[in-house]
Length: 95
Image (cartoon, rainbow, N blue to C red; front, side):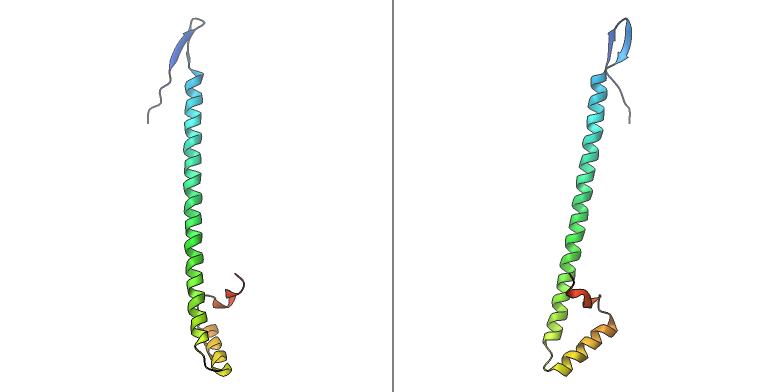
């Protein structure tokens, strides 16, 4: 990428225009802000997807446990989930 600056003559010397440097700095700051906003948006989207998938998993576990007919079967299903370690289903209530 090439960088050129506007020049002016003053005091019998040629100087770079400070206005152009300010514009370049503002452009860099604008790009930086844009990338930060895009990155924050991507992080928010990833967290949203993660939360939705966790909620779906919790609903599947609750549906599975709700199908038990009595307390003994419910306890058997809970033990089965604990042994198979189904995506840390135990922390369902902590979220």
